[in-house]
Structures are given as C-alpha cells and as structure tokens.
Amino acid sequence: MFRLENAQSLVGVALTIALCWAMSEERRRFPWKLAIGAVIVQGLLVLALFGLPALRAGLAGVGQAVDGLSNSTQAGVAFVFGFLAGTPNQPYALTDPGSLFVFAFRVLPVILVVCALAALLWHWRILRWITQGFGFVFEKTMGLRGAPALATAATVFMGQVEGPIFIRSYLTSLSRSELFMLITVGMSCVSGSTMVAYATILKGVLPNAAAHVLTASIISAPAGVLLARIVVPRHADAEVAQDLDTAATKTYESSVDALIKGTNDGLQIVLNVGATLIVFVALVAMLNGLLGVLGQVGGAPISVERVLGIVFAPLAWSLGIPWKDAPTAGSLLGVKLVLTEFTAFIRMGAMPVGDIAERTRVIMTYALCGFANIASVGINLAGYTVLVPERRAEVVGMVWKAMFAGFLATCLTASVVGAMPQGLFGQ
Image 1 (tube, helix red, strand yellow):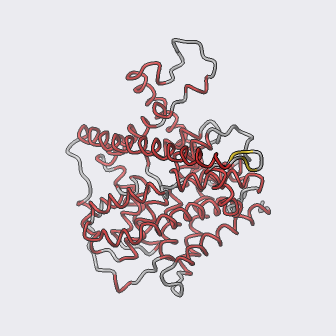
Image 2 (cartoon, helix red, strand yellow):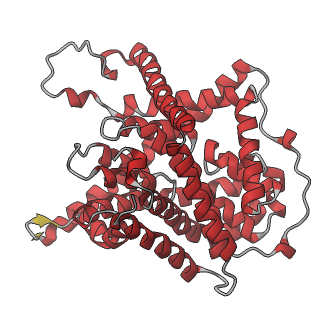
C-alpha cells in the first residue's frame, strides 16, 4: 500500500536530480527520457528482485551463501590467529561477548577470500559471462556504447578502478561524458568483495542484509549513469567509433594462478581499507578533540558527527526517513562522505535494533552502499593516472564532481527504494 512515507521519498528523487542539474555543465541539455527511464528501471528491478518469488528465493540464497562464506573465512582466520579470531573457545572468561567481533579479524579477511573467488570465477568465465550480460543490458537500456557498457557492468562486481581496467585500451578514445560517467558509476557502486563485508557487518541488525546490499550496488549503476549524464551531458559527435574486443580483458594462466593473483589483489584492498580507516578515524578524533574545547551545546559536546547530522538531516528526511531518525541518518551520510562507507556501515551495524526504525535502516543501507567519499577521490586519481596518464588533467578537473554525483546516486537509489510499498521488504 502506498503511504505518506512513500510520497516523502519522491521528494528525494526530485531533490537528487535537481542538485545534479544545478551542477550540470549544460543545463539546457537535460536527458528527460533517460531520467524517466532510469528511475523506472530502478523501480522495476526492486519490484522484481523482492516481489517475484523465484528472484526473492534467489536473494535469500545469496544471504545463505554469504553466511557460509563468512563462516568458512572464519575457519581460515582461526587457523592463523587462533582465539584472537573470536572463536567460541576463549582462554579467559568473557564479560562482553560482543567484543569478540573484531573488524580486522571478521570483515577484512572476507574481502581477501572474495577477491580470490572472484578471480577464480573470472578465469572459469562465469563472472565474465555475467559481466558481459549486464553490459549488454546497459548498452540496450541506457544507450551506452560497448566499451563503457562493459566497464560499467564490471565496476558493479569488481570495483571503481578495477572495472575500467577491462577496457584500458579504449580509455583514451572515450568522450569526456563517457569518462566522467565511468568515474561516477565507480563511486555509485561497491565491489563484490565489499558487498559481502557490508552484509557481514549488518546481518545482526538487518534481516536479509546480503540481499539488500547486492540489490543496492546493482541498481545504483543506472542512477550513476543518469546523474553523470545530467552533470556532463552526452555529445554523440564526440564519440569515436570502437570495435570492442572482449578477449583483451584480464586473463589468468590457470585456476591456481587466478587464486594467487586474486589473493594478492585482495591483500592490497585489505591493506588500503584498514589503513584508510585508521587514518580517517584518527583525524576525526583529532577534530572532535579540538571542537570539544568549545564546550557543550544542547547538553553534549560538539563533534564532527553532530555537525554532519545537522547538515545532512534534511537530505536524509527527503529519502523517506522519519524526522526523529533524520539527524542520526544525516550523520551516517556525512560519515560516509568524509570517513568512507565502511565507517558508516560499522556505526549503523553497532546501533541496536530499535534505536532507529527498520525502514530507516533499510533505506540507509542503500544510501550508504557506494564508494563516493573523499578517500575515493585519491583512489581514482591514482588509478586513472596509471590507466590513462594522458588524461590525468581531465580526471583532476572532474573527479570531485563525480564524487558528489556518485554520492547523490546512492541517495537516488535509496529514495526509489523508499517509494516502494513497505510490505515488499517484509516491513
């Protein structure tokens, strides 16, 4: 049944699109057909994935697979680190069982295992076929050309810099609009490895967390394409004809080679995630210490989180969040933008059931599920400097716009989900 909360989420749809239009390089070239089509495609995908029994059963199976993967990973972690991995058999009496969940031992190793499995599935051509299938869908429904469509699809599963690697030889010939779109979509989605990590963080407080995280990353791709086209409109005459060679993508010598290289790639991601979290959380703690000198306001000290909550509360409300939860949700949005989505998911996962409404938690899962944050600006600059060094100056000029477009893309996705009937998600 359509309720007032669903209509409230439509405000978020209009607001996110309007904000991107305000940043547009050519406001007169608004892609009306793409805007209507992308939002409809997102809505239909959500309805199909959660409304059709077969697809809903498939999403439930994904949740079971994530649990199995997490448990298997813990077996490997326990073998290496022993009781430090949080095994039930501890050499001391526990006063707080919740303290056994240590991020470094419970989440980061999952990324490592998933990266190795992704490389193996790519070598076996399973993930390659899935990627090419999604690329075909993006090409036919969103008006993308072959190479950008393939990179967009690969980004959904592989990550913001890993996706464009598969069309590296075509990057120099992409139009400005296409290059901006790739960067934006990369920040709108998350990689397969982090999807599983986020589901692991949320599974104790959000039913069917894996299904929501997987759906969020997939349906945010059309949102990223749409908002990128609004900010940097397409010019067909600037697009150079291309013959896509899918054989030029990443290859491995054997299954063992895929596992080894996938593990090495995963190790780099794990180190980057861990180091980024340490540095950014430390910087915010420093800022909070400085702000604490100003004293208390409203009975509590001033902090970065409180300021972000105030700034982003109206945006959070527009997504369909009840106003009583808006400051908390706004703070999570700000934390995602400034500290990375990992920190935001960790904080939401630490909120006990009942602290925020279940509807709020579902909508925020979609709003947070993307790589759009300050750290990703550096990641993209470094990645594209290696992939296409001759266009580095161009990337520098558009990467901050792409970050905001990617941030708003996940908000658009959250708004579309908020506009869906609440019974669709079992609420």
